[in-house]
Length: 457
Length: 137
Image (cartoon, rainbow over all chains, first blue to last red; front, side, top):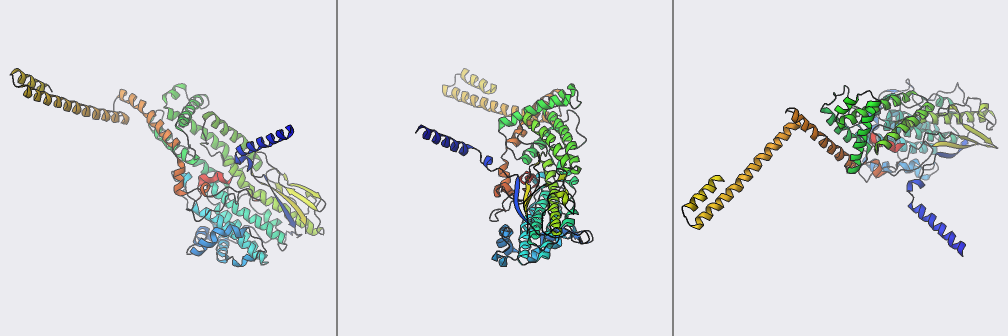
C-alpha cells in the first residue's frame, strides 16, 4: 500500500512538473530530418549533361523578372480568394490523389517559368529608408506561396501525369525564382529565396525517385555555393542597424549627441521589438553609461578628461558605435569565408554579444547578432546541393553495378563531393541492401540535418 | 492695493458710516487679490521664457550650465518613453507573422520552408519585414 502511495505521488509530481514546464521545452525542433529514399539507377554521363538547374546566361531572357512575378495575380480575384490560400494543401498532396483534376495553375506556372528564366530582378525596395527594419516585403511573402508552394503543387501534378520534363522545367523555375528573390541585400529575402530553392530540392528528390529522371550529378555540381553574392547582404544588414552613426561624428560636448541618442533608442526599441519597464529602462541606461565610461578610457583611447566632458548620452553612443565597428569588422568577412570558418567565428561573436547583454541588462542586441547564423543558413544551399549530388553519384554507381549500392563512398565512379560544413564526405554506411547517408550535426549551427535511408529499386 | 487701503483709511478718518468703510475695505481686498494674480502670471511666463532661452543656449555660461542640467533629464525621459512603449500595438497596424503564423516544425528543408503556417487570408495581410528575419532561423 505504501509503495502504491509512493508511486502515485511520483507520477503526480511528474505530472505537475510537466504541466508547469514551458511549452517550448517540449516543442524542440528536431535537429535531423529522416527520409526513405528510393534509388532509381541512372548513369550520369559527363557528355550528356545539357540540363541546368539554374538558367545559364545563354538561356536567359534579358529583362527584369519582378514585374512578371507581380503582374500574374492581377485580375485574378477568384484564384486569389479560392485557390491561393489553399496552395499549401495541394503542395502536400500525393501524386496519385484524384483531386489533381481540380487544380488549375498552368497560367501561373507559365509566368513563373518565364520569370525564372529572366536575367535579373530589381525589387526597388527603399533601402536608404530612415527606418530599415520597417520596410515591408509583402511581395516576397507572396512568392513563397506562388513560386514555392504553388509551383510545388504544379510539379506534383505534372508527375501525376507522367510529365517528367515539365516537372524539371518547374524545378528549374523554382531555382530561378529563388535566385530572384535573393536579389536584394535584405537577409530575409535571401532566406525566402532559399526556402523556394529548398522546395526545388524537395521536388527534385521526388522526380529522381519517380524513375524517369536523368542523372542530375553534373547539373548539381554546376550550382553556385549561394543563390546570390552574400557580400551586399551582409554590408546592408550591418549598415541598417541603429548603432551605425554617420561619420564624421560631432565633437565632444556637441548638442547633436542628444538627438543621436534619441534616434538610436527609438530605432533600437522598434527593431528589437522589446519592451522595458521604467525601472529596467533606467537601469539599462545607467549600466550602459558605466560600461561606456570604463571602456572608452581603457579600450578606445579617450582620456579620462574627455570622458568626463561628455554627457551620459554621448558616452553611451560613442561606446556603442565603437563596439559596432568591432562587430562589423568581425562579421563582414564572413560573407566570403568557408562555412567551417564561419561556424568558428560565430561562436566568438555570439559569446561577445551575450557578455554585452549580460553586463548591460539589455533584452536584445543593438547589433544584428543573428547575421552569422543567417549567413550559414544561406550557405546551406550548397550543402543541400552536395548532399543530393552524392545521391546522384550513388545512383550512377547502382546503374553500373546491377542496382547494387556501394560499400563506401570512395568506391563511386563519380567522385562524392565534400560536405562544405565539415570539408569531408557525408557520413555513409551500408547495411545489407540499405544504406544510410547523413549530414553531420554541426556544433554551433542550428540547422536541420538530413538523414536518408537509401534502398535500390 | 496701497491706494485702496489709503482711501479706506481716509473714509474712516472722516467719520463716514461703518457701511461705507467696509465697502472700501472690500474693494481694497479685491484689488489686492487682482494684483497678486497679475504678478504671478507675469512672473511665471517670464520664467518659462527664460528656461526656454536657456534650453536654446542663447544665454551666457550660467545659462549653459542650467541647460546642461536640463538636457539629460529630457533625454532620459525620451529613452524611457521609447523603451517602455508598447510596440505590439504598432505592429497591429501592419500585422506580423507572429500574429498570424504559428511556427511549425518540418521537414527536410533545412528548417526554413513551412516554418510558418500560410497566412489566413481572412485576416489583414501580414507582410514580411526585414526585422522578422530571426523567425526564419
